[in-house]
Length: 432
Image (tube, rainbow, N blue to C red; front, side, top):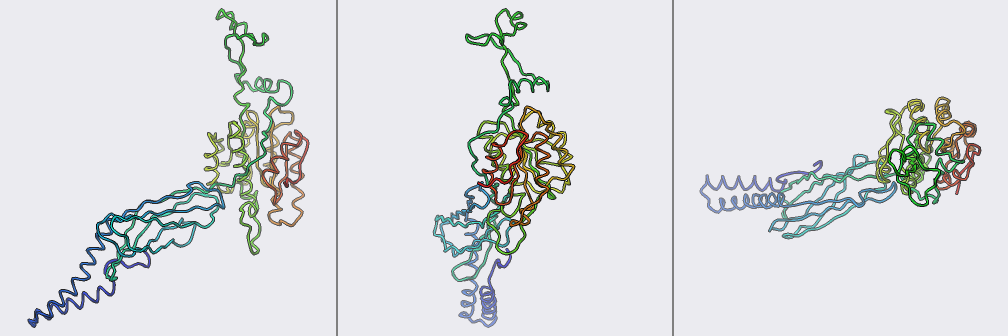
């Protein structure tokens, strides 16, 4: 351990040297008292060494992180339970726990000696951490005897892994419309166009609509059978998260920074918005897919809100210049699910990809939160005039668009998005 000595201290080394000298001189000169004094001087550090080394192997450590999943800006505490399993008491203990590598330094504590079989818990609190995955530990303990003859370090191997997830805001309890909520038989028409198998049959039950009788199946089975509509995609939503580094901006460092990471970075705002909207949809019983990997171009299907927030805890900006690698995936997602995109600054290629993905007149809705990232570079400025033009292009392609500025809330943007008319309105600003 850096800065710690292990083994005999300087005091013990001097006493051993003096005792050895006295013992040898006493033996050479035949001075019994000198031999006794030398033996006593040697016995003190050797006895202390035996006691300390025995204590070292009889000390146990249990540790925990509270909570194991925290929200960005939340507090995480590490609890260390130290137990002396020996019948002998220990001297004072100096505890040193390794902080996550993203932080500088170590957590250090001085614990008074532990009596036989005594257990004691010490805790420390992490500073506010940004979104990410972290590991604390392992713990190292420095043991010493009451006379400070011996310093020994005991290292443990246990660590604590914990996750700091994006901030998840509660959203108004309103869902985006499903495809079959738009127009007459929009859902059935969409399924028929795209070739999904939308009909299975079951036995006729009293009260069933006679128009749903499936005569071919009825003739084959000898009993009345009715069509049972199955629209597996109707409850499906897909989140598209724009993680391109070039698409986002940060607030310049000019003194005191806002504690909320979303106020400092448009990327953090986008990730938090995706986590909030995805969690809202999952809790409402929707199936949710996520498109965020611009390299592999795959859609991740999520089985619960914890998996979504855990995944978004570890995502980072990517150097991809545009959204062309996910062009086909975006078109597929727009055909088989309600598409919700959280977007940064769009270059012409990316804008064309999104406009082509959702042709105007489609029965399945598509929503876009378009971040005016210029307002993160200059929060007091008027923003980027080109952002409104980009929003109009998406709106003309059938998207519902809300332009988000620095300081806007996810709840306000979501509410504005659902109030906008399909493929027509561009809501500028979403302040609560």
